[in-house]
Length: 294
Image (cartoon, rainbow, N blue to C red; front, top):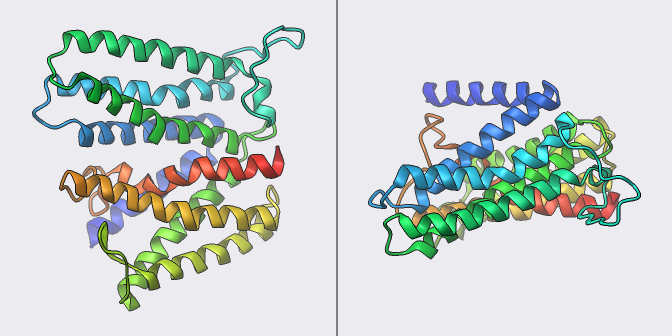
């Protein structure tokens, strides 16, 4: 229990330091989180008997991290905006961050090149299921890389890094997860999804959702970046998709018969265990904000 509390304290301090330390600290923090989650995911997807296991994990992590790493270059102004008079305008987003589309194009181009490189490498790496391996690599992009890239748009909506937005979304997710666990462990009796997560109960799930909406109301008074309707909508995204994200990762772990994705955080498992809900929330939170603010 003491070790669990210490690792939780260190984790929270690191997260707060990264989120409130400025745009560059945010970028470094979530680049490490993205890479760590991908490394663990590749370790889950590729069996220990797989040939060239370490190389495959490196390739899967690198490919999956590209959307965040390249799109995040917006924070450092590494790419210039496309001139207003340019004939080619592939705007993928409506928000102001889309004014700098070069990082988006660069990320897409690098992803395509890297994917075709993986096709070529699988010709020479010893494996009986090369296309299954390629599917694992692409799963890392979709499941981890793209959601964290979308977090950049959420946190950098109007040409300024807004740490309170990131903190608020993290707080909603942590509230949902933590209160669902605490309430479920105290009064939970009715199984919620016993096939995937035997310990999850309806009492805990509904308790976590209620607490999440209460926190959203408090955030609407404290953080003016979003109005009350937006915070409540984000709470709804967390309540639904955060819960589903936890179940999806549990489904993955049960399919390969392991308990935790890693052991980086003693008593808490790995990074993927800590961010499974948050990752699943991000695409839907991004879409909700696009519809309201775009």
